[in-house]
Image 1 (tube, rainbow, N blue to C red):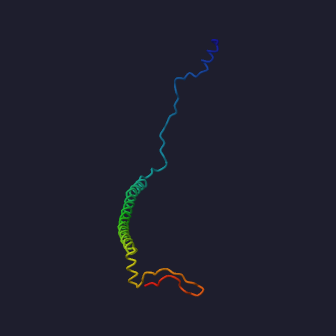
Image 2 (cartoon, rainbow, N blue to C red):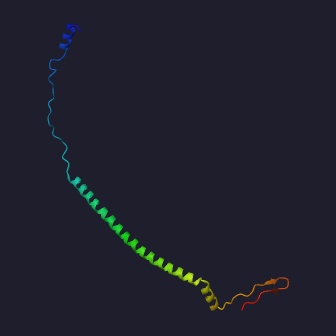
Image 3 (cartoon, one colour):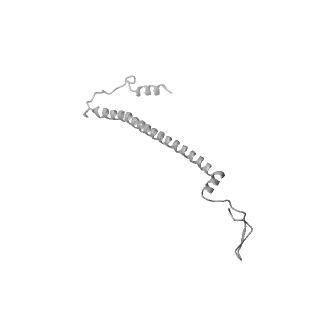
Length: 131
C-alpha cells in the first residue's frame, strides 16, 4: 500500500468515530385509561373457590359411594351365608338315606326283579312285581 492510499482512507472516515450520536428520548403519556384490577381479582377468587369446592364435592361423593359399597358388601355376605346353608340342606336331602325316607313317606316301594314284555301276546316273562 502506498502512503497516498492510506492517507485517502484515513481522511474518508468521519472525524467523530469515537463519539456516538444518540437520539433524545422523551416520555409520552398514554391515551388509554389504566385497567382495573377488579376483574382479575374476581377471576382469581372464583378460581380459588373452585379449587376448594370441587375436591370437597368429590370427596363427599366418594364417601357416600364407600358407604353404599359397604352396605352392599354386608348384604352380599348375608346372601352368601344363606347360599351355603341352602347348599348344605340340598346335599343332606339328596343323600341316598334321605331320598329313601322321602320315597317311603310318599308310599313308594322298591322295584322288583326286572322282566320283559312280549309284544306279540302282551305277557310278562321273568320279573317280580314290586311290593
